[in-house]
Image (cartoon, rainbow, N blue to C red; front, side, top):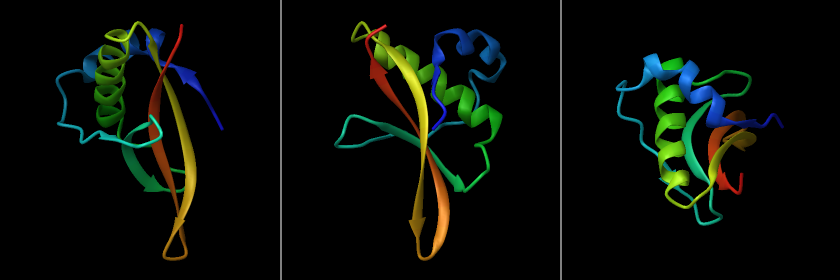
Length: 90
């Protein structure tokens, strides 16, 4: 799985800020799910940028940083990539 600490990426995607409303779901295991797409695809850049910005703000309130990750899941025989972030110590 690819991991990316969002701190430096927020500036690169600042143009995406103020983009679409992104439905972020807090999962019981501490992850924040922001997109589910067909396996091998990435979320739309504006969705990803908005989720990164919101995640960084949320995590900074805890003195942490947002770490992006994804996991492949199978539903009804089809593979999907779930994109999420977690708040981790810097």
